Length: 450
Image 1 (cartoon, helix red, strand yellow):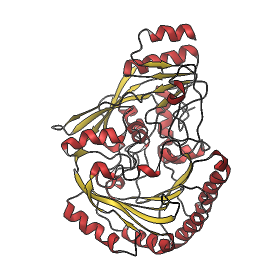
Image 2 (image 1 turned 90 degrees about the horizontal axis):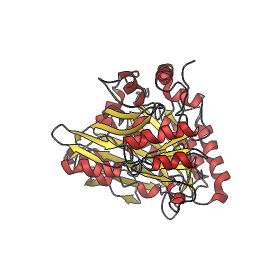
Image 3 (image 1 turned 45 degrees about the vertical axis):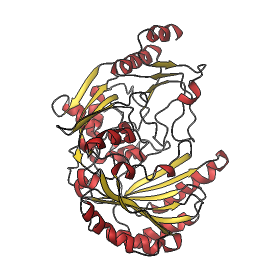
Image 4 (image 1 turned 120 degrees about the vertical axis):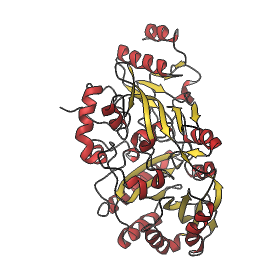
């Protein structure tokens, strides 16, 4: 191994990090503190040439490969024990063409970096609700975010992607070049190659929008969630509204409504007026704010290094029984930063055809996320059990669909197939064409067609 690594180091523009190196311990960490893996090598890449060389090195050494962009994947699929970690975190460049309303971003960029560059020109595309999330994982798996109901998902705004395939070949996937691959990567995750750069379509957004959080005591949760359900039955495309059962910084349990209206401020004020007038909030930050601020307002609730375990499914409707079940389980939540989130989908995201991209979930409704999050290893068992029990109690209410970006590390096979529904067989056929030996399998894995 050492000879191969030494040979690669002579032409590698990035950094090859080995377990004995000072940088190794920090370099191997990802966002979820529950995941503790030790790669044999970390190839911190500077560009496509480095990625291609890292892929070839892994093949020469017969090492399994994981790929890290932002490192946010809750299941820990962005790292590996004993294999080669292709680390894109140094590849954070973003170039905006304001005239064409496009942006090209490298695969290690986060949404904080992306939004900072595009907002210079008052432009944006649908990105993550947490600014520290990487653009790559979010986009390749779907891309739920504050602008989705107006401008559809992150992947719906993808114009092209540069990929390094399993043989080290660099290809472009777009509507004109390798269109079958372009269809597959828009939802198919990291199954087909390493995405080194992305080209996005941009839209006029901000720099000021209307957004914020209104939170209430948990004692008002039944009324607030019923109000939320009724509110989400008729929203304009510009208005994205999520709800959550959450913990305050002092540990108090709350129910919250979180929103972003990306249209004119006067329309945003009218749209959010009903939320601000409802109930007796203990916190109200809703009003005009910078779009970049909207994308950071929840960051503190997802600190790097916290231990996390998630369960998630799409929820077609929010019935009274479902509301009572969610509240009942959240009242018993032992995780000090635990949450139950409802992300509402309507508008543009639902007007894309089920088979137009690999991402099939195009019906109006909610994405339910039971999110257990805590600081101490001693609480692992009880906090994981709570999430499983709460999700199990909701199984009679949820639909068959799953959001692939939210699958945790104990969900494979059937859960992955459910994430792709009627598109799964076609994805398997694309997989066998571009990665027949399943070289890229440390992901929400799509098995090549038999």
